[in-house]
Image (cartoon, rainbow, N blue to C red; front, top):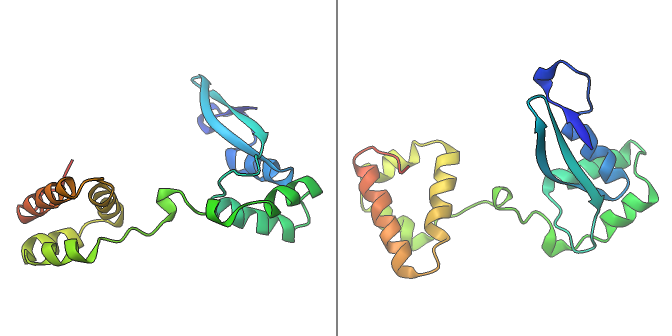
Length: 157
């Protein structure tokens, strides 16, 4: 499906509206691709039974259902969703710094104070970076780097 970008000045359905329509019929959007400077396209396909459901799309379906816009196919796709495939995107999960790492971090009060003052998005990024390392040695190394940079009031880039 083709769309015009906002700055093109041409009328077009926007992405959110198109997803609403897709959800009503049990479909989902794919990756957005550019066509030219003022337009892009997005492929829509029927949802697979094992597809992931974002919290945003679940809320959209609830609103669409209340408005009486869901088709039987859309409702069937929604009801077939698996609980373990719901709200699993990393940006939807609350990231928590492991208590042992937090305790180690807090032994450096200046570093901890600097880190705590940072934007939530920065803290989420750093906690994900720390906790996503597969080896303990890597997690320790990353924690040391975060502490060192925070001690000097510097963000990790």
